[in-house]
Length: 301
Image 1 (cartoon, helix red, strand yellow):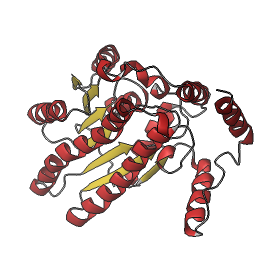
Image 2 (image 1 turned 90 degrees about the vertical axis):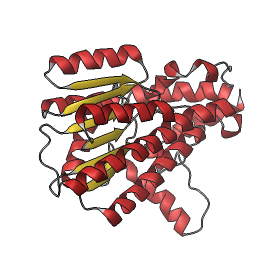
Image 3 (image 1 turned 135 degrees about the vertical axis):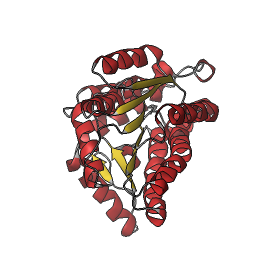
């Protein structure tokens, strides 16, 4: 249970937009010190200006979370400025679709670099700092939140590269939770699994590094991009609402955080098929028209 956020420090990756920015706004309203991390300089600058204007103490750093060296420099800066962070939001993520055999090595390097290695670096670098702070003070409390996706619990077609990365984050965070429980009662962990929420995720190719962005998208990737744009932009649950759910989860030490709990029916179907040793169920059972549309588009490509 965590009920005091005043004066505590939070590190937030992907803080320039979406869930990261909304969590930072809540943090500012609670009197927290904020470490804002994003790869997009203009979005980061806007977030920094807004949150400083609200009165928060802010350290802003432009960082590629897939880079071990840049993340190590970030950790050193956090330690020097605020000490060990109480909260770490490994939130930065990118999206990419297409038929799984059509994803290039560069596609895999980009998505796994940000979505998986970004989380790995955040946990690997900040957890020892948090454990040291907890050991020195029995009243110290902390929490780590890793952003996965419902795609980390499901396997929707034509977005396998994203599914793989988010399944990795779910497994990683479940293991982190268990590992922390072995060594401390003072640090918790949660995994955020949003469904379709209007954020910048469907346009994340805008930040794809030049050395990984020189390939022409395949037809299946273009189809996937169009469907993702439509689904994300039509989402009814806002990023701000999801951010409030994250803070509720930290207060209550709740591990799984869902933006759309009703979507868990699809997760149940998948798990039941696994336990029953059945073939994977139809992912479009509740929205058959989407499956028909996708199949028609891919077969006519």
